[in-house]
Length: 100
Image 1 (tube, rainbow, N blue to C red):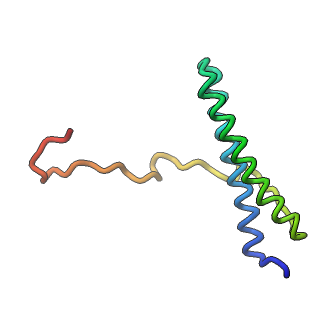
Image 2: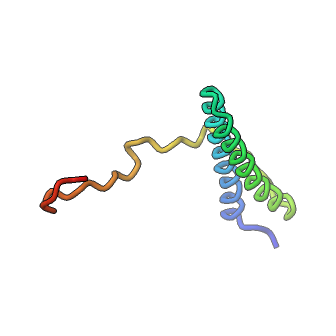
Image 3: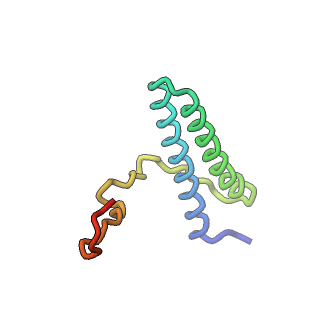
């Protein structure tokens, strides 16, 4: 049975997200290498490999079913800007106590 277009598109999109995550982890590894923190750099490399492994599972799943893999540009993903993140909780001014 053929895979629906929506599912195929979602799986291809997930491949892109996994590879983007791997790219971010490699970026962090390079940063830690520059700071002479090899332990942190190693951990980020391990995480990058894990993300590539996730991408390959989706890749193989599509290939095994005769579906088309479409590798999309990573540049089409943008990191969340600080303005788009949820604000951190602030102490209520009506609580009567001073913030800790």
